[in-house]
Each structure stands twice: as structure tokens, then as C-alpha cells.
Image 1 (tube, rainbow, N blue to C red):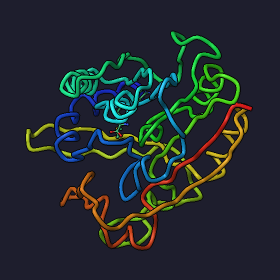
Image 2 (image 1 turned 135 degrees about the vertical axis):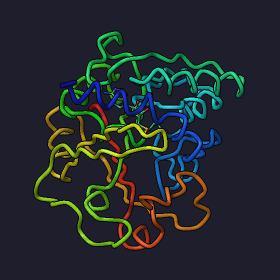
Image 3 (image 1 turned 45 degrees about the horizontal axis):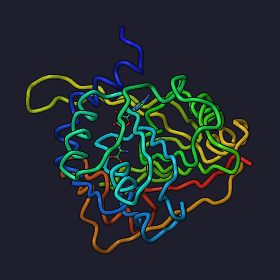
Image 4 (image 1 turned 90 degrees about the vertical axis):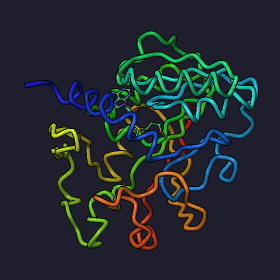
Length: 255
Ligand SMILES: C[S@@+](CC[C@H](N)C(=O)[O-])C[C@H]1O[C@@H](n2cnc3c(N)ncnc32)[C@H](O)[C@@H]1O
């Protein structure tokens, strides 16, 4: 039996093409996820020109590219070769230089301590089995006063069936969620993510030495173009987004 980490990588290798087509993510500004305003509205990072930024779980590289367009020195890290191939091409199309590195973001060994002004992540850390390990590494590589801003699926939203808006999972029971789907190619694909409570995320932040400055639960219902719903799962239904935020954002700092 393959380890969860390898199965998660397999999922992203197999679903990268579909994801990039479905999510339609732009490179105008860094984005935070479904129904969330972009960084040009939220302004959590301040001016990034000249800043050294590491994006963890960069996927197709859209946020890294947006930062590079603003004059930042950016490195994007992801575990999936397919996602990084897409990112390299997109950076070329946008005529910006971004360094892309294939790595598991739970160990950022190749990045030196106290080296980055900003570590950033959108909608990737729900696929990381060990959040504490990852955050400790982020703390190590950040410069003093450096920012770590990340988003992922809101823990309340993730427990609800978007079609029925009824509870699907037990919030009190965090842990691994495994779902198997049969795709049009007739093959079975396994999706794995880790459901966490707000207190689990808070503990991981504090135990890594980071200071939590802000939690944001913004919902922007109009003009939602990216992350259009998969009609099969309706994961990001407008009906549910009106009641529960799909995205949660944390702003933390290395003091
Ligand atoms: C939903 S995508 C988000 C990508 C990008 N941030 C975006 O907003 O489109 C999740 C990404 O996390 C990456 N990922 C999952 N586990 C990882 C790990 N342990 N280390 C690095 N990347 C990982 C996947 O390969 C995938 O590209």
C-alpha cells in the first residue's frame, strides 16, 4: 500500500490538467481561493517589490507569477511535476522569472534559515499530513519580522455537503479524508486531504513559534470566475458560500 503522501502526489499528477482547466486562475494578483477577494483587495502582504518570497504548494504558479510581475524575487515549491510544468510554461507566457522547485513542503531543507521576507500559500496545506512540521520549517526559513500568509478550505465549509448544505463529516473528528472516484478514463483515483479544527491550526501556528496576527473569513459572492463548481460535486456552490465561507486566511509573523 502506497503512503498517503505518494497517493496525494499521484492525485495531483493525474488531475493537474483538469484542475487548471476548471479553476481558471488568473495571474493579475495573488488569489486566496474560492469566493475570497484577491491580494490586490486584501493587501495582507504590503508592497512586495524587491521582497524574497517563497510560495509553498504553488501548483500552476499563478500567485508566484503575480508577485514576480510586481518585482518580487520568487521561488515556487510544489510536489507535483505536472503542476510545475504548467507553472514553468505560464511564467514564460507572462515573461517573468520565477524559480520553481519540486519538493515536499514539510521539509524545506534546501532553503536556508532566515532567508525569506514572505512565505505564502493558497489552498495547498490541507494536503499536508504534518502541518506542525511544515510550519516549523516556515518559521526557520523566514527572516525576523517575516510574514507567513496562508489560506485553505474553511474547516466549517469542509464538513458540509455543498449540495444538501447538511453536515457530511464530524467537525469533532479531525484527520484524514479518503475519497475514491472513477473518472471518465474508467480508472479509480484516490483523493486525500486532512480535515482540521480551528484549534488544530492555531496550535500548529503557535507551536512553530509564529505569531498569529489575523484570521480572515471574507466572502465575495459577485464576480466569482475562478474555481467554478464541478457540477458533479458542486464543491463551491453559491448556495453554501452565502452561509459559510469556503476560504479561511491566516496572517502570521516571525517575531
Ligand atoms: C489545490 S492545489 C493549489 C495550488 C495553487 N496554490 C493554487 O492556488 O492553484 C494544491 C497543490 O498542493 C500541492 N501539494 C500537495 N501536497 C504537497 C506537499 N506535501 N508538498 C508540496 N506540494 C504539495 C499539489 O501538488 C497541488 O499543486
